[in-house]
Amino acid sequence: MITAEQKPLQEIIQYIAPYDKILLVGCNECVTVCAAGGRKEVGLLASALHLNSLKQGKTIEIKELTLERQCDPEYVEELAAYIGDVDAVVSMACGCGVQTVAARFKTPVFPAVNTKFMGASLSQGVWAERCQGCGDCMLGITGGICPVARCSKSLLNGPCGGTSNGQCEISQDVDCAWRLIWERLVDLGIQDRYEELNAAKDWRPAGGGGPRKIIREDLV
Amino acid sequence: MKTESRLEKVLAAGHIAVTSEVGPPRGCNVEIVKEKADMIKDYVDGINITDNQTAMVRMSSIAGGVIVKQMGYDPIIQMVSRDRNRLAMQADIIGAYSLGINTMLCLSGDHPKFGDHPDAKSVYDVDSVNMIRMVKDMRDEGKFMGGADIKNPPKMFIGAAANPFADPFELRVARLAKKVAAGVDFIQTQCIFNMDKFEKWMEGVCDRGLDKKVYILAGITPMKSVGMARYMKNKVPGMDVPDEVIKRLEGVSKEQQPEEGIKMAIEQIQRLKECKGVAGFHIMAIEWEQRVHEIVKGAGLYPRPEV
Image (cartoon, rainbow over the protein chains, first blue to last red):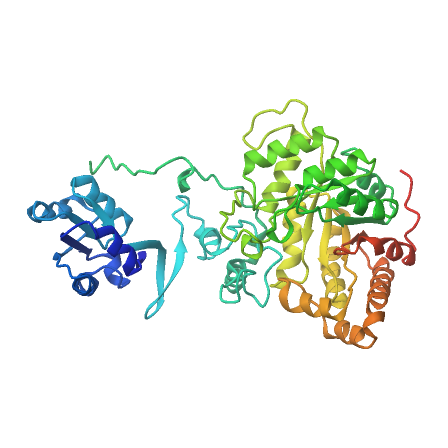
């Protein structure tokens, strides 16, 4: 899923300082799962913003709303009923949601979260990057461990010389992806495959070819 | 002979090769490069010029290499994939060769985290294995990576690094094999302090016949002090400094430690001269270029051969 973290409160306060009527919009998908921008976080942020405005001797109106999926125009359309009554929208969705809202309405839209990465949950409250969306998945030849996302240098042909204690040179808290790949290949009894050369990556599907788009003719 | 490289000629003639390195300055003082190169020139077959080592900005390796070349010596430029994409690399390789440089080292490079621009976006478009293949295809096929023909292609003698001490050890021979398959001509290893482990790695290299396909120069770094030894053990990624190295330096007075460090480096070379598959030595005397001649002489590697 897409992970996110709430922005510092002061940054959000600065965005909305000129406005009195705010539509605060959460999203029921990824940001709900990673506890950054779901219904609960919408409520908490609204309280914090109210509290701040009281301290400033100001009153603001905040309409709270959480959409099923903010990156989908069909659900964003639900905001049309409220948009005329507000000066600004604060979105707690990922960058995809913020942009979908901004594309639909002329009202200013501000992000309340920083979108982080595509990750998986390791344990309660912990998420780690697992995919960079390179558009040409090589997990089939790397034992199910991605060197593009998980090697700090995205090396395609093995570990650099910086691995120590099985960890990445950048931090003992980061696993060396190629150590993991190697161990996995050994476990599977296919370590000979390590020596097959992986050619330099074509980065076009990864975004090097410009903004990416999928068009499914069968669904259009 | 694949190239005009002096290092290639020395190695092909069966001599034990010696290379050393110059870290270029963090500024524009050409004299620093010249002084350092002058200190080692008579004792080596090639002078590496490092490329933004430890991710700190310095005079470029190619510029340093050109200065060394103009002095009449033999530069080995280094190129890290951290700082350049495939367009910039190929352009710089053509440029370097056009300015008289014929030997280079292909590296991935330390992560920007270690340097003075940790906020930089690292490139890593092409890894070191694919960089080797790219330089080889430029030389042997006359082709750019994108497939087009090169008019007057650069003919580089191609080097790379190997670290027998980084984890996982069992993979390190296979990692070298990949670089060999990609077309590397010579290897300069990481600084060797754990001799037993290095010899074990070389055994694996020779068992697979890789020593017949690539020249391996063993990396030697003299310790200036016990403090340096401790620092390298604890702070430098991928470095294996056994306790006996530290103990030996601790066993002599502070004033004697540099001498002991030089002596240890010489002893290492003497021992590794007997190690099957070792074709030469790469002496990395970090900010200590003035002592390289003692090591080379002490190890019986002087004078350098005429080729």
